[in-house]
Length: 87
Image 1: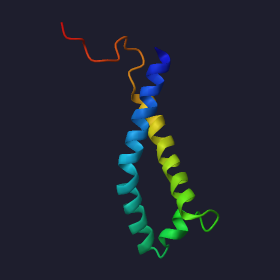
Image 2: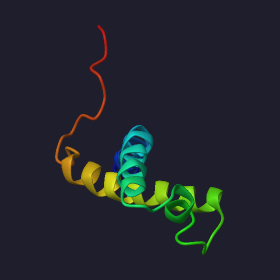
Image 3: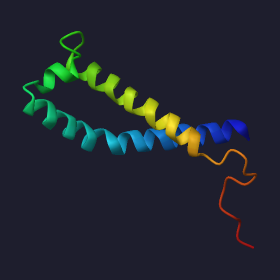
C-alpha cells in the first residue's frame, strides 16, 4: 500500500510540474529578457549543455519542487486512497 501511495505522489508531482513548467518558464524568460538575458542562456545554463537537455534539467528542477510539495500535502495517514466502491 505504501508503494501505491508513493507512486500516486510521484504521478501527482509530474502532473503539477508539467502544468507549471510552461507558464512559469514563459514568465521567467520574459523577466530575464527585460534584464537582457536571452532564452538560450537560461535553457543551456550559460552554454554548458544543449537546449533540449537543458530544458529537461529545468523540468526536473520544477519536478523536484512539485514532488516536495506533493509529499508534504499528501494524506499519508488516511487508510483509504481510492474512490468508494458502488454497491
